[in-house]
Image (cartoon, rainbow, N blue to C red):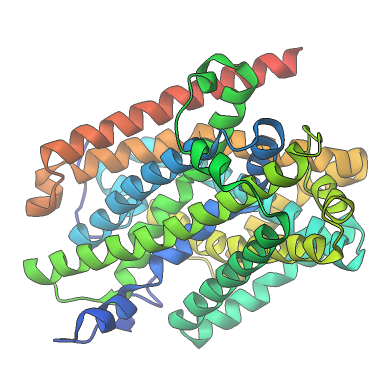
Length: 441
């Protein structure tokens, strides 16, 4: 690793850098409110349409067994997101800027290309998810729906122009709608509470049953998103914190609280999707509902209520739109951080959208609805493969006292972080091997 320069040419997301005032001498709840936001923008990536596919498959095939996997994925997510926030607060660099500052130019370019592929793959899941939701709710053809999703760039530009807190408020509101939809969904399903509780206990079958292990790893890949690490390390810098050691310690504490609340909200929503699939499809013997469209069309006859299906589609639309908001910001951070290249936000968004829309359009034209589910799962595999290239630099940087000073990871946290990074790398390698093997067959 070569250290080039410690300070970035310009701050991360310069138009909103230190734009949110943190009140001095405020009480606990006012500080909670001031620091809350970045965690929720990050949590959006943990409940995007890609997660829906794995949650539906897990619940419909194996009932409540895989809730344990969701819980473990969530704990890993909380750890790596805490590291990302720590990096941003301590060094005033986002993860992309840190990579550019400390790795050679060639390595930085490779990491940038890999990250752009991951963002395009994630955007692909959002495009397809939103298009499916529009099709289910308003009968808009999938192809037209894919093209309509490109217009959300205008909403994003407007919100950024209004101020960062507006963007955060919209994201939190959409998360609340998704949560509300699933709360009503669960009241309609009336799942078995004892069986849900058993799902939190690990079973050796997760390792011995090949199909269950494959879905479990897919859940892990869909949960911990690589671009979220770049995003979080930048978003924490939108707060105008006191740069003294005490001020930074305060920022770390409140950002950790923000992440815990937001990511646990995402966990509850993912668990609700899995519980809904288990309580509805598994109970009725529909054990292979992996496609979002199938889930929608099967809900009404099984529950005897059109409301269940409508709420499902509304939540899906909110999920897809929310994820595109944060994906845009992540793309901007990655490009500016790695390349020190600034594009106007609308151009950056257009490029990202085209990278996602082109494969989506080709799939819809040639393979129709059946192809969209395969493309959703494929996008999650790409994300999984890129993850280690974000997690390993993050763990290295946050454990380096020369870069982090007194905020470097203590030994116990460093050991835990490397253990999580190792587990992620091994599971993703396994997922790749299995996916290639399945395609060859």
